[in-house]
Amino acid sequence: MTFGRTVFCALSLTLVSIPLAARAADCAPPNWAPAAMLGYKIDSCDDKAWGTLDLPLGDQSKTVAGRRVRLNYQLTEDSKNATAAAVRDFYVNQARRNGAILMSPPSGSSAALTKTTPDGEFWYVYKQSSGNEESTGSYTLTTLRITPLQQEVTAKSMTAPLDVVSPTCQDPPWLLRQFAYFRHTQCEKKIWDSVSMDLLDGTHTLEGRRLTVNYELTDQTKEPAALAVARNYVNALQAIGATLKTDPNGLSQPPIFPSTLVQRPSKSLTSILGAVLDRRRDGTANWASTRQRSDKSTSPLPNAHSSV
Image (cartoon, rainbow, N blue to C red):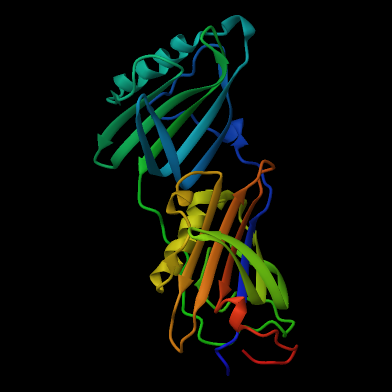
């Protein structure tokens, strides 16, 4: 076994395109705002076990994370079309009657309120989705309970050669445990390939053997937020000694989460781990991670049967 050559591995996890929100019949109004504005009805909703929420706090900026439920409302009676202020105040008043405290300025087309209970800290957000000061075509109500991210991915140091010859499709050798509601559906193996990565110190071209594993969501009711997937993989890789080599702010702002990590485990094995999660307009998302042991200047092109 030779560890002086380049090994490149890629993991690609794809969230297949599925409906982003449940049907109106499956949605229930939040406890803090049980009554809908007259002339408006719930159109759809989505429920994430963990997601982020940007709070409209005026000049201040704050993002919270946890269990998130979002309901989308649509105007169903044109004669009931309400002003932005009327709809905002309607929901602010309901939340206040249920013990919430207004934290945003009492103006504009959005509002943020908070409430602390024995069950935890909650945030309630109203936001106009379409319209203007004199008209409201649609709006959203979001409820978020602050909770930690559930770590569902576990990684391990790669101590064996990367297999890019056998026809068997399996998890990459550094992945110990991943999301139970995903399964790998396809593998692509390259004896030699190159990938360009934008790191903090510039663009680097990495060359070597490459393994790409594609994953598919198997339970649509458990579709995770894109950021939850990205942070799970980065946390898992950092736990085995990997160092983030791209801007960490990329892991906090959707819709794109680029990250690259470097690891130097045992037996002088140096790995470059890269991850890109791209939330596309059609609702699909791609997750890719890469691994490389050394730069191309020290890695001769191997033949089809050489070991690494």
